[in-house]
Image (tube, rainbow, N blue to C red; front, side):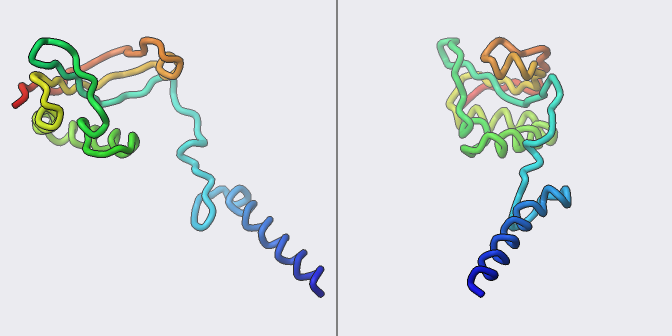
Length: 134
């Protein structure tokens, strides 16, 4: 009887692991993470900001400076949404958080492969807002 119980438990676990694949859907308690399972295009569009200090040198902005988070996916979503709603307000907020003398909010189109390989990847850039810091 103990052997039959182990077989039943083993089959149930196997079925639970294979169910998301067989049903082609994601959900609790098992997830196949479909957001990472599909192919992306050759280009990606990002909203970001460029900052300059009082001496005219570029400042590397952190994710926290850009969007008050440490999660890149949340930052990307927040920047895209805030830039669509009010790019000038986003610019002022980034300038205040970073202490930069000048901030420029931009929408950039990147070559995905070049970016992954650490090569220059910007294909196009559009300025959405420019502002002075505090």
